Image (cartoon, rainbow, N blue to C red):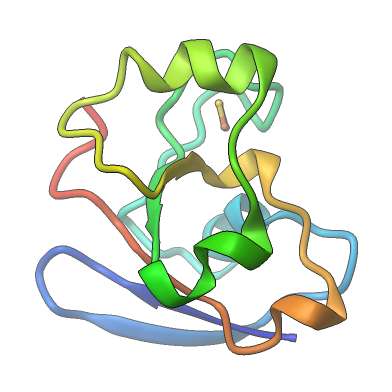
Length: 105
Ligand code: FES
């Protein structure tokens, strides 16, 4: 499935991310700077914050539990904020657009 990453500086990347990987892994594997992912994907750093495009938010779904708590700590949260390490890529998410924040701190 193709995931579109839009950096805060306007840079755009289209990446084919394997099903079962996370949106965070797709960014890190392709050296997309807007996602740091310091904890490696265990939902404890919140440096993989992204904004899910409004049109996709229902399909991606809302954060739960630990992710919801971590999202309270991110800089500049928005209604469609998610932690990209908690979004698993599926065929249904082919074409997904996520925007990345100016900074993860
Ligand atoms: Fe650390 Fe997502 S990579 S919370």
